[in-house]
Length: 205
Ligand code: ADP
Ligand code: ZN
Image (cartoon, rainbow, N blue to C red; front, side):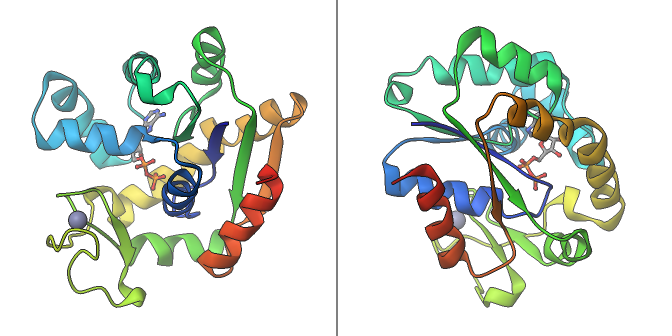
């Protein structure tokens, strides 16, 4: 199955995408994670993306389109994939249609009021990419034992910027995919386990 997760920063799409990908045994393709890794390794792409990401802006379309195009050409994507964080603009969605298709777009919806809390309490393991929240009580990464840190773009100023960017550039995709008849809306508010059940249901799995 070819699935895309859509939602505001902090909606919980990454957490859900990770679990659903494991359950369906298909890869999770997170453009944010690919970019963070490139920054960590200081590759030319990472150097180009760094200032955009840290300020909460979007990385230019051509950069992320190329990342996804190359990644989807790999063998493990042949039976399906979950796109997490891409497309994020209408031009990205139009470009995607030139080289891949989607069966289903899952919009994870949350109340705006809780987003800032979620993002400011979020912690990240740079070693393996795992994300958690201070309320969940992990002292070190539950996956690899690595140190948990706060992402630079989870600072208050970047959070505000990311939410504005979402409203302006990404939210129009809701209508774009609704018109194509493949949009499903699920709640990002309740317990993760309930959220996963709801997603499996709308996917018909
Ligand atoms: P979140 O969903 O919490 O915002 P992501 O890991 O999806 O986190 O993205 C982090 C940052 O990576 C974004 O704010 C943006 O700068 C960059 N990024 C990720 N995906 C894209 C994309 N499709 N287009 C442009 N920039 C992107
Ligand atoms: Zn880890």
